[in-house]
Image 1 (spheres, one colour):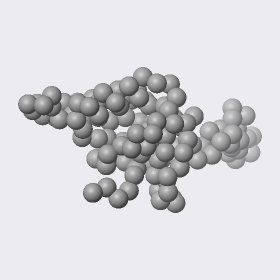
Image 2: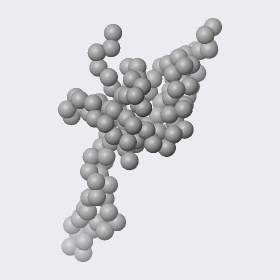
Image 3: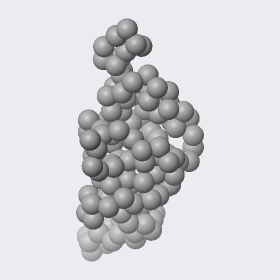
Amino acid sequence: MKYQSYLIIEGVDMPLPNSYDLGFRDIEADTGGETEAGTIQRDIVRNKVASISVGFSCSPKLVKTLSSFANKSNLKVKYLDTETLELKETQMYIDKFQVKLIKDTSYKGLWEVSFSLEEY
């Protein structure tokens, strides 16, 4: 039984992932850099922009669903924020989409799908 949702993409509650790696980065303006005195100046335009690497073992049906998401340029995503342990909603896109056949079965196989979700 699933007690915690990690990802909801376009209203589809994803199954429990094999891996879930959440990272945050800052987006800096081009005006930042090193001063003549040798100190670093950061001009942050946005902070805490989310990047999520995730992997699933899944059925052919889920492979098809995830592949359709990978073709979209903008996705509504709710992800588990590891700082608050609550779902946070944002706009993201899929990058580095990979599909790998794990085992061929009588029902179209067991697949491993991995990708990164990048916040706009």
